[in-house]
Image (cartoon, rainbow, N blue to C red):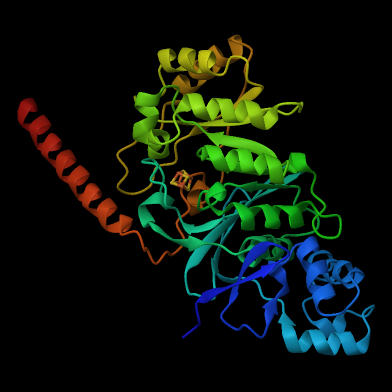
Amino acid sequence: MKKPILTQISVNEHLYSVPDAPEKLNLLDLDREALEAWFVELGEKAFHARQVLKWIHKHQVTDFDAMTDIGKSLRAKLQDIAYVRMPEIAVEQASEDGTRKWLMELECGNRIETVFIPDGYRGTLCVSSQVGCALDCTFCSTARQGFNRNLSVAEIIGQVWVAKREISPERPLTNIVMMGMGEPLANLENVVAAMGIMMDDLAYELSKRRVTLSTAGIVPALDRLKALSDVSLAVSLHAPDDELRDQLVPLNRKYPIRELMAACRRYVAGDRRKVTFEYVMLDGVNDSDRHARQLVKLLQGIPAKVNLIPFNPFPTTRFKRSSAQRIEAFQAILMRAGLITITRRTRGDDIDAACGQLVGRVTDRSRRHLRSAKRDLRNLETAAVNKVELEKNRL
Ligand code: SF4
């Protein structure tokens, strides 16, 4: 049986999770700063960090012996004390529209999902930040599986490493969104370090505009993110008032909309960028003209754009996707008010790779999956009773 990832080490004031093999360090866990500090601690020159970072991420070389601009004795030393290991692909699925989904197995046996969405010249990778998710958004498939733990830096950047290896050079990776399984701000330190590697010139060279963190709105962590990084921000809003958002995104009960909007304003203060607000379109729940007008009012004064996401159903959900006409009417109200509004094309839904459908395999430590199963059963019973009543009335 594989060993769980347990050990945490401190390098340069950052905490890193490493596999339970203290004598060896997975170098995927270290960003440039941490790698430089590690080499210095070893009594070596800091510039070796830059060489190693480039070999691993740019050239995808994981064998220290093949890192030919590093001296032989240092290569031998690295073999003894370090290694490079990323998650392994357990299952791969390809959609008719070109979307690819990888179920990646971690050393602890849990599985996470990563999705690549090619679209014209763009190639967007949707990366997971946690095994499952501790938040319980009612329309989200990931949420029903419960939560196991945060991903390490190696497990986050490892998804990017594997995707780069798998995709063709003609359709390269141009954008990364931290929108897969999990709430990235609940794993802030590791996510920030991994995003640093995504933007590093010696690694994936993505600009801050092409790396986006999507959050349900952990307000204090959003302020910390601003101090640590300057990636683009997306907020899973989904409702224009607290009453509805409390139901759809339970985190709202802790950080209500007013506080969230203030944090968004602080995040983009002094910047020309806009916050992207994601709004899943749920039939008869949050998609009326009234909701659209409320949303316009809410976003007044915030540099914002809106992504409308047609809901992607999954088994046992009680929600339905809004009709195309309803989404169009909703979008028209926002556009008339001057809000840049895009309706996201549903991609990869034939392989359950669309937004909100990622599930992986999670050893739940929160017992949420049991609660979800009970809730599903109740919903099924209610639906069955309603159907019988309907039939009776018809007769
Ligand atoms: S929508 Fe995002 S934050 Fe909410 S439960 Fe799903 S993965 Fe977690």
